[in-house]
Length: 485
Image (cartoon, rainbow, N blue to C red):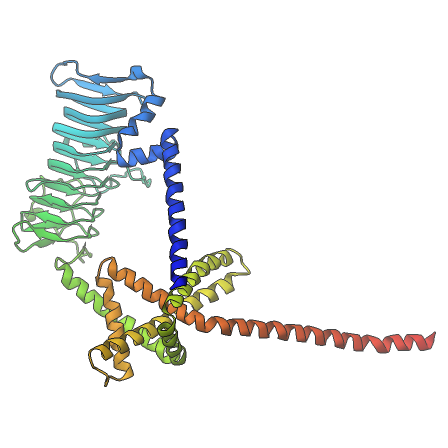
């Protein structure tokens, strides 16, 4: 128990020291308006975000646009150093080629260029983002999200499959960090939405990446579309091109059956022009990646082969290292805390040592051998832990007549299913893994040390023998030379 208290105090002390150090670094960075504070402010949208704007931009360039203008007049913002607090012109069309708006841009129509950034967009007609970024939400009757400006998109907002006409691979542009709300929403390849897209009445034509859910009355997913959330629709079908990926579920808002229509369009049609009668199917049909709606059933089916693999691995390990696994059980029973500590030390020292040896050509074989030894020790230790847990549980329930194989099977099943318990189950698994590794380390380390000493002694003996043979061979030559003299 004293060793456990010592380890706990050591870990608590260094955790407190690291926490205080990190707090001081962040605090001084905010006091000095350093780079770390700047990144934190912009990432978390803190009020201190405007510090750097006030520091780098002359105050005369910060202004509000509130002057009345004629209806349908375009207002251009093309100065990269221009910082506006907000733009509120409901009867005006605004085009921001460069610069930044901290707050909301409210206008009849908003166009955002590649070098522009705004807080949020509220457009009564159309919001078109051509490579720019929006920190919060975008709302408009029609919304277009594109990686860069293309004149063909100006009037009819087509969704071309060959949008990258120059053949160059462009980095992701056209980012919305919030949600997109609109009647007609189009996203092109290379764009990203970190929030939700659409409403129950929206028409969606998606070719970019969406981190949240996509909700709409009519949904088309192009070949480059990646939806990390769910696709929710009030219709009974979703049109998807080959290659489209939905990581979540495809569901009907009224719990009706959903039909996945695999389509292949000519690349210029929009959702307004596509109907089921005009859809033609690719021959042969390519795979459309969709996760099964029944998530629990899918996880159960996936868990079966995983569980079989765990059973096979631990049984094989126990079969080849029966004696070591049995001895590790004794170490776990007699010295559980020491086993956990040695397991932690083995990982804390073994992984950095493997990395240091791997970056040198000479140490690569040693690094690989060390990695294999750690993995093998973990498996042997886990098999011993499972055997011990099976013995304890069978004894607690009066099942003393169980054979050794059944006890180990019971232990493996109990330990493997701890993964289904969030956080607590993973912590218990980590402790059991460290305990098993430490128990095997207690067993293997003296062997390794003894073999190393034996190898060193044999090297010394061999070197001494070689030196003696060399001396014996040189003595006759000296005697013959003396006789000649």
